[in-house]
Structure formats: C-alpha cells, structure tokens
Length: 638
Image (cartoon, rainbow, N blue to C red; front, side):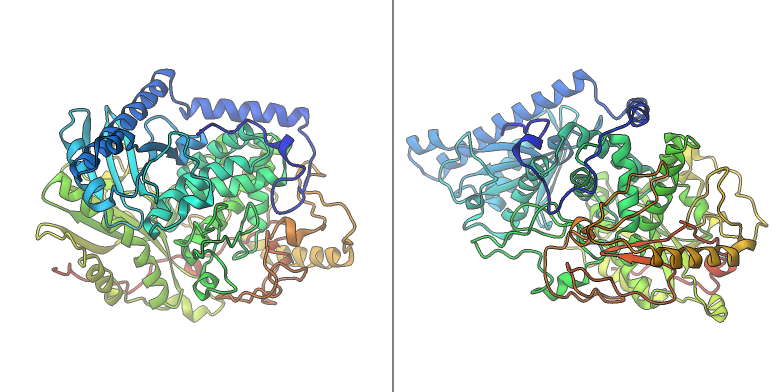
C-alpha cells in the first residue's frame, strides 16, 4: 500500500468534524521551541538507526515470502489443481506505530497477513504456518494467542519482534494491489477478521485525516514518550495504548492545522485538560455503512453509554478504542493532563524546559499503600503465557475494588511488570491505593477490607483455560517502606521522601518552581479568587459570532466561544446520552453540560475549565494516609 503524502491540506478545505480552532502559523519563538523539542527526542533515542530500518524491511520482505509459500502449500494439500495453487497468494500489511512512522528502536512491528477464504485461521494459520515458523532458525520466542479478542502470533525474526495477525477474506485470490480500505473487504467475514483488518484500516485512515503527516508524527512521538514516562501508556491496564494516543494527537492536528509540534503538544494538554468526558473524540463522522456491522452508537447501544473516555476509530465499523478505561485510570490521566498544561505554560513563559514535562513519574513515592501481585510458573514459556493472561485481568481487579468500596478506594495500576533476578520465572505487578477525598471527616477513618474482592479476582484468574498446576498468583497489601528493592533501578532503594509536611506526597497538580499558586494556608483565598473570576467570566459572555482563539496570550489561558459544541466536543449525534455521573444533556447540541453546584468550574460544550488553574493541596490524612484495616488473604489454590 502506498504511503500517504506528507500533507493532506491540498486535498480538502477542512479535515475533521469542525472548523479549526486556529489556523495561525508559528512565531519565531514556536520555531525555537520546536527545534528544542526535536533535539530532546533525538537525545532520548527515539529514532532508529539506518541499519535497523533496513533490517526491519528485510524481515518484512522475508515474512511476505513465507506466507506466500504457506498459502500455496495448504492450497496444494487441500487438493486444488495446480493452476489455482500457482494463483494462490497471501499478502503482508503493516499497521500501528511502524505504519504511522513513529516506532522506536527495538519496537514490535505490527503486521497483518491477508489470505484467501480457503486458508482458515485455526487449522491453517495457527496450525500449518505456526509449524513452518517453528522449524525456521531465524524465528525465536514463537508464541500464539489464538483465543485472544484479536488472535495473534508473536515471535522474533532475526532479532526483530513481530506481532502477526490474520484475516482470511472472502476472496479466492488475493491480488498484490489489494486495497483493504474498501468497505467490501469486510463482506462475509467473522468478527475476529473484522477486528484484525481494522488495525490497518484505522492506521491508514488516521494518516489521511491529519493536515500534515510529518508534524503529526513528531507530535505523536512526543506524546508517546510522555505517556510512557508518566505511566499512562498501557491499554491492557486501563490507560491508553498506541492507537488511542494517535487518535488524540490527530484531533489536535485537525484543530490547529498550521501549528508546529511544540505548539501542538501545548494545545494537546490544554484541550484535553478541558475536555468534558465522556464526550467522544472523533476524527470524522461515524458511518453506518451498508454491511450491517455493529458500530459505536450510544443512541442505540446501552453499553456504549457506559464508556468513560470514548476515543472513536475513524474506519468503518467505528469502535471505541478506549473501552478499557476505568474511573481510577481516567482520574490519573486527567491529573496528568492538568500537570502537562501547567508545565507547557511555564515552558512558553521560559520558566521551564522540556525535561520538566517528560520527567518520569515517581510511582513508588506517590502512595503510602500498594497492592503487590506476584505470579510465577515453572518454565519461561509457561510464564509468558501466564503473564499475558494475568495482565489482561489486572484492570478487572481495579474495577472490582472500585465497585466493592463504592469508589472510596482509588487505584493506580502500574503499567508494567518487575522481575526479581533471584527468582526465575517470577514477576510482580503493583497498584497504588489511596482514599478518595471526602467532605465527610469521618470517612477518612473508614477501614477497607478487600479480602473478598481479592479472592474473587484470583478465582477469575485461575479460570485460565491453559492453567497448569505450577502456575501461581498471590496478592498482598504492602506499605511504601515495604516495597521490594528489585523494583528500583539497580536494586537500590532511594532515600525516603520528606516527611512532616502534613500534605500528600504527590499533589493532584505538581507545582513548578516559582509558581504563584496559593499554599495550603491560602486555600480559602484561592477559592474566593476562583469564585470572583467565575463571576467576571459570566459577565463577559462571548457571543456566538465572536472569533474563537486559544492562542491570544503568551500563557494562552484565555478562552473565547465559537462553535465549541462542534469544535471541541466532536459530537455528531443529536439527542441525549446517559452517563454514570451528572448527565450529558443535549449531546452534540449547544447546551451547557450539567454539573454539580459544588464544583468550582465553568463548562463549555464538553469542556470544563478551572479559571485560575489552581488545585488545592489536600492534607495527607484526607487524601492518602495509612489505610487502616486493608487486608488481603493467602493465595487461592486452583
């Protein structure tokens, strides 16, 4: 498939659901900041070498030859005549970060094999092709996940990691110039094939829907690095994965078509800090299509109204790519968006550097209480299989804790595992715990007994179809001082964070040096200030005919209203949608979103903004503290 050009601006007057917020170009200051940002990415090692790029291309070429040989072999084995055997073909497509052009050194290549209708998934792809790959010396660490939501084979080919999906479409012969972006490719195929095809279809559609591909790529590289360092890059854990971040960045590129990467990073945090979830992020109108496939539509599907952070894929059938997000992980991400917004404002005022924005999140200093999940297996292969299953269930533990404590105990799962070198085939996962802030002082002394919740989670884990007696899991409560040393770099525990401040170790918003934000003893003053500014903003209402700009001042805090319902909310549906909290009224219409009167915010069509950006520091006893009575149980035997 040919690569889209570097600019799509000439092909359409407008890309996206709405008019841009700003079509302004960069200033000299923006050019300088973009150069600094690009240098930061290079220094961070985000670009692969020329030799590695060639190695990837060679692997893809070799893989394409292998699947072509495979499909001829199975055609012959099934008794087709030689003319059909010679015409039999399969083709390799790429998607994900490699196709988008934002992959980093050592990253997996996401690939899709498209085969003819007579080449089946289970018998031929996960059977015969798997056996072919096993016998090849170039292939290492081959592992098939045939029962996954999107079935996949994972392996290394000459040291390059590959994820290989399969789609057998309703064609007898696969042409070399096959265009899988056409809707007809989805005819008469099963749901797993639709999901496998959609990876490529969505990736290519994203590249068609951004104004400038090179600018999009640089910005996406930034956001991927930021998300990984801040611990919010993991779809399976309940945060966002690669496709989610790509869609969020693409929408910002549409809203600011002439901006440079440094400008887009700043606007990314500003827009999504204001976004009123669960209003969806969409790059284009949702197509109903002619094939009758299910697509994301909260007007018709009740389960779609329950999604907390919908980010909709642009290719038919449109789906919510972020259905894994929970209230706890959404809380973590919104806090990080707020932090990113503040730091970008400081960078624009020359009071901070890009290093500040990308500073890794100190997860093991952020909470006083954690859940530690340990897993083990007898062999490395068993651990790999067991690990994949357990990781897919950890987000359910978060959901169960939220449910069983009525949201009073908040969870922050760490997106990744840790290994104790002294224990072979052993991994550990951690989830930070803190008490939800409550206006009721008595609630801060509430004890949480989650033993039954943990037992319920472990019973679910032990339902694994390929469970072996040597596969094991344990969940226990540990305090910060009890965190094992193997989770820290070099196995060396850092000195404990300062104590005696009387405030939470990690405030909701991390303050920058020189910030004028009020201290805790000025909290009342801060609230009065916000209330006063709210009143002033109400008096200075902006008419619908005024121009929209988020770019007027150097700090870029000022907001004017113009078509916010279409531009920011991205809501293409008339009518109403229900939500778990204060309801969305007039979804996609020019109405304010309902909100509790106790919240000190102003609402603009899917957005909420704190006028002065101040978030008060909460006392440790209110917000975190020692969680008394937190109990878990001994392992449950399968």
